[in-house]
Image 1 (cartoon, rainbow, N blue to C red):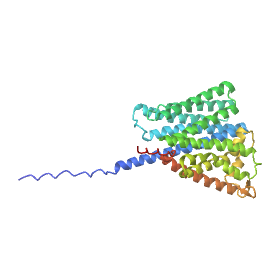
Image 2 (image 1 turned 45 degrees about the horizontal axis):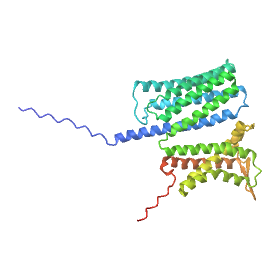
Image 3 (image 1 turned 135 degrees about the horizontal axis):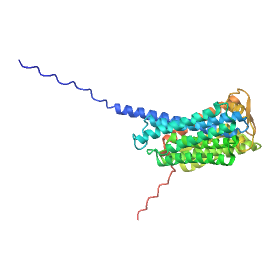
Length: 375
């Protein structure tokens, strides 16, 4: 009796052609979330640095608490970077899977957590005197700076970012050393040190999260930094002292927009949304940074908490400023100012995001060479 033919082996279902695309899409989503977290953390760090620098009138205990939070925030930037690397986010040029890759990633996370723990210890132990607490915070800054320098050894990072991260770590170490050498552990001098380090690292974290890859994106970043300097320093300098100008409110609006008319000259009228968004960004730095800069640079002593609450609309119908337009004026209440700030921030965010995603449009319009005349 002939044996039955063996049944053919079952066929495995073909691999879905979209499985690789789905994995890539998931990796891009995780990468974008991580980059967004870095940008937000960097922006918050910059804002917190301004608060630290602009509030020297706090009590020693209040200032120490503020400094501990600032140092922990600085260390958290290292934790986030190391955590993103451990999560398997693909690098920009090659995918690292070596032993050094994992050691460096865990090292960055470890030193960041250590710095956070030291900063927490400095404020949570009531037995510490002010000098000892400041010493602990200085140690936390040193540990976090070492974490920055460890980040710079990432072979997959672009050269400019490795250099920037290394420079930030060295800059922090040098500032800590100079502060201790010249001022010991005086808390007021240390507050300036922490504010500067946090601001520099915050800007670097924002740029790292944005991850510019096109030279024209760097141009856009420079325009944003110019807007920040122009609004915070130059406009606020005028606004703090020069309100006697007739129709001051109208004049101030024109001053916001004036520098960016150059964009229209070189880019054409198609660039008007970018020019307007940069002018609105200047106005935001003016309205939100007014007394922060006044306290920090020009010797004002405004209580920043109630003032910023009024600017953000938390004081309802309370009068915060008067818009002088020459023949008429407008009483601006807290809710009106707050609504204006939120709307401007939304418009600026949408427009700048569009130009960031379309850097090819940031290019000066050239004139086509004339065609050669026939001989």
